Image 1 (cartoon, one colour):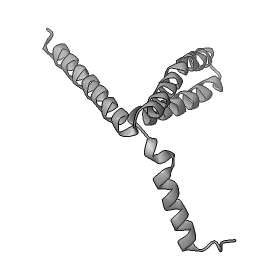
Image 2 (spheres, helix red, strand yellow):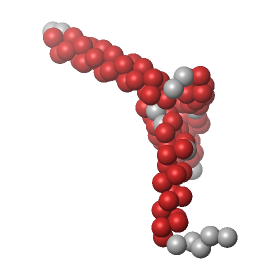
Image 3 (tube, one colour):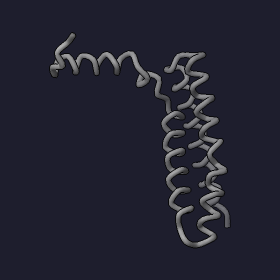
Image 4 (cartoon, helix red, strand yellow):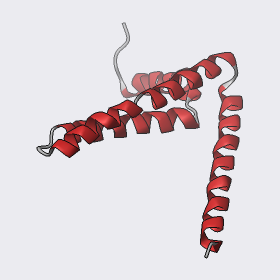
Length: 113
């Protein structure tokens, strides 16, 4: 049995970081987790308020939960099918195109009279 020294723990943490789930983190995975946390926390806060409109809005917010869950499922499927590097590169292209489209739309709205 190993003694749990700092060097032993540090070696195990390094091995965990190399071979574990942290190598398979993608852009959409992070965005999906953040949106899931935001949806659940904001819905929980709104549902526990006194006003009926805030309670209703909290329940309506929960209707958006399938979108980040579906994104997580699709992301994890493509990670198992392809390499994480390829999937992350493709997702960065998608994200860049979305930012470009939002920028073009913002310019179009600024040029309107």
